[in-house]
Image (cartoon, rainbow, N blue to C red; front, side, top):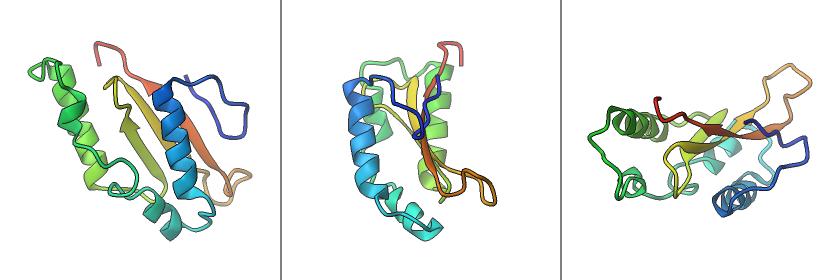
Length: 121
């Protein structure tokens, strides 16, 4: 499922609403890449240990290991144009923020979406 900031937002879980509120506070007024990168800095956005997300989950599962590895990669190499994190309660549900492509009608926009990974990911 994909939801865009330019369209009415669907109802969100408490995790989704908390993500949007946190994201909106950090990117309010972000007009250039440096500001957006600072807004999405892993220390100011989500300051949590990915291992805490898997409490009670079989971390020997190849799927869980892959998701944790990808979460660690994204947090260690932040992009000024894209940010994604799993929700606090579901490792298979991620929220992302994406800057519109330059030289397009969407270039001034910052868009939010949700990624739901299948159990067989």
